[in-house]
Length: 185
Image (cartoon, rainbow, N blue to C red):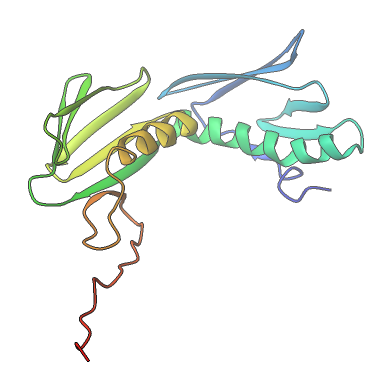
């Protein structure tokens, strides 16, 4: 039995969970102070709710169903966490002249290219730049937050020689030594 899948999910106050059957499986809708998230799960996983606790159970012992058990539970737990507290990714920019600026629904990045990079922030996400070298991406959907942070990072990944570029706040960039001088013997 999946250790993750058999853990119950407690629903905090202010969060409403609805489970409905659909032709593709079970549709789970989670509403909270940060918005509403919906997702359809496969029919091989049974999702039930009683007394403010969501339980996820598998319908058979097939390998594919066992693999989906813990994943389904983790998705539902992330939905509940997202609408109640939200998720945040912090990106740090390192380099001379490298900076970011959030302008309404756009993010403008100057990363050493001949032109500034303008990104439109996806719906449901919020992007802030408290400092020129710090970007905070936040939202209720963990997958959207992570994907947008990844897209920002890919414009200038950290250089292993000078550590210039965009990196996650807690990311460690392993530095390489430059060219070593040898004697002319």
